[in-house]
Image (cartoon, rainbow, N blue to C red; front, side, top):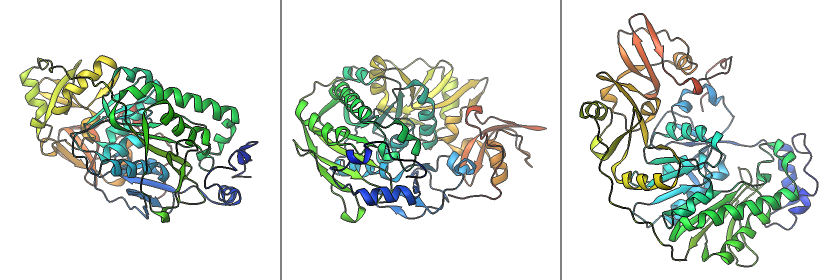
Length: 465
């Protein structure tokens, strides 16, 4: 039994030969141990979040002693941290190792990005001159990906909604591609016992075939000497080490060994044919859930796409441009453009890359949305409120108590004792939550309806994370 569930038929037997698998310890940890709760702090938004023990392989990752109600923590909504399973933050360790001597700007692709944990993790590890394309294959999952990247506050991201085969036309474009592949999900059994109902040997084999297709489709988009990071939340060798063998046999790729500390409890494995290095996470050996991760380097020459000369800048109304530039710190670093009536901005150096991506992909969003100019004022967008580039000196700010912040996040009426008028940035502990318009006799709450807290009862007392 595991948390009231029985392991699927043949599941334990299927793992008997897997590297690092110890049946008794594995089954016991599923019986008696609760899945640990962990968060990853946003390095761009320093806050008072009370973080506990550090995740060994991720400096910004921290375990929490208890699981608070994140829904009722304004700092969560402000993007000060992301609730992320500790094992999956190992991707940051891989990224740090392969980029340790690389100061050149890079283009990165997170192919299966929703809900956004690994995208925000990558975004924390790269510079503003690097560009991250966060792609989600399933259309209905794109909004949550956008929301989480918006909370993170950076502008060097593009969100796309494309099938992996669409990226095959971007030959040699990306310096690094992360494929956190759809899998049979056995690594999540402790955290999500319902995943057991989906597991079968047939499904493992089906996932293996799907993983090969995804990798084959996206492979041309990786440049020569570029890196592929591959991960799953499965224990099955068919979805892990066998995929490494297939990549090395089918394509000109070589395995990259990632240095790890033995005290971390990670199991280093090698594939049977090509001895590709893989890293296995078991919940009985470390504080985290099941994960497999590996890194490979592409040796095959790839014909690179060349950027054509950038198109002339969009003809923009100078008066509106002057208005919107005032809302951004160091506006000379950014390219401003309009999508319909909405003003957007992104780092200047990314303009030609975004124009090229638009030729091949369906882009849901590029950079950060500022808002719409109406008359002589900007009707500010929620994305601007959460941006780390907002010029706070250009906007009125209203500090909220915890109770007021919860009222605001629930999109309720807020009782404010202020004489301020017009658009105000609603702020909690120095961190913006969104916008409200203050009028002589009322406050118009502009927190997005789709993001509002719907839970009927707040906790009896504030629960910090």
